[in-house]
Amino acid sequence: MKKKLIALTISATLSFASVADISSVTNALEADDVKIAEQAYAQLSVDEKESINGQILNGRILLKKEESEEAFDYFEELRGEHSENIDVNYYLGVSAVIMAQKASIFSKLGYAEDFLEAMEKTIALKPDHIDALNTLIGFHLAAPGIAGGDTDKALTYAKQLKEIDAVQGFEQLANVYWETEKADLAEQTLQQGLEQFPESAPLYFTRATAYMKAKAWGKARADLNFAIKYAQNDEEKSNALYQQGKASAESGEEIDLGINALTQAIPLADKDYKPWIEYRLAQLYIHSNNFDKAKNSISMIDLNDDDDLKSKVKKLKKKLKKLMS
Image (cartoon, rainbow, N blue to C red; front, side):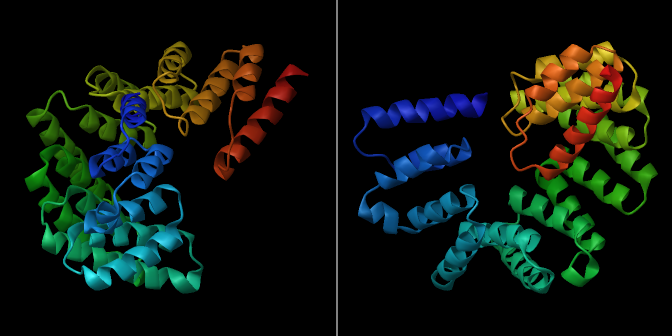
C-alpha cells in the first residue's frame, strides 16, 4: 500500500512537471513502478542520463523489467570505467546472482564467481552496505561449496551485519545457525534479540517460521500474533497474517483464526502475494466444509507464471471436485 501511494504521488508530480529529475526515477524504482521510472528517466536531460547516477538508474530499470542478462552485460561494461563505484558493483552482483539462478549448469559457476567478486568489492568499498551483506549471507547459505557457498563466511557477514543493524543481524545469525544444524543457538540468538527488541515484528516472524517448519503450531501462532501486533508497515503485517493462515491450513487447526487472518491480509498484500493468500483461503474453506467459498477462492487465483502455485491449485481443484461429487 505504501509503495502504491508513493507511485501515485510520483505519477501526479510528473504530470505537472515538464522535466523529471534523478530522484523521480529513484523514487519510482523504490516503489517498484517500472513504467513511471521509465517515464521519469525519459524526461531526464542528456547530462543527467550520461552521469554515472543516470547510467546506474538505466541499469536498474533493466533489472526491474527482468531483463537480467542485458542488465548484467550493462553493469559489467559500466564497471570497466567505474570499478570503484559502490552501486555499479552492487547492481552487477545483483544481476549476476539472478543470472546464476537462470543459467544452465555450465554457466552457473561463472555467474556465481562474478556475483562474489562484485558483492565482496561492494562490501570492501562500503562495509555497512546492508543489502549487500544480506545478499552475501543468503548466497553463502544457499550455494553449494563448488559454487562458492561457505557457511563460515555467512556467519562472519551476519556478525558484521549485527554491528550495523542489530535486528537484521539477530535474524541472519539465527538463519546461519539453523542452516548449520545449531537449532539451540538459533533459538538462543532470537531470544536475545527479543529481550533487546521486545516489539520487533521481524524477530517474532523469523522465530514463527522456524516453529512452523518444526510443526510447533501453537508456538508459531503465538509469535505470529506478536508479529501482526508490532508490524510497522503493510508488508510486514500482510506477511505475518499470511503465515498465520498458512499455519492453520497446514495444521488443520484454528481454522477460523486462519480465515480471519487471510481475509485481513488480502487488501494489504501486493499482487504477487495475493494468489497465495487466496490459495490458502481455499484450503481453509475446504477444511471447514465450505465448498462454495473454496470454489470461489480458487476462481480468484491469478496463477501467472508460478509453476509451484499452478501445481498446488491443480491438486486442490481435484480434491474439491472429489469432495463435492
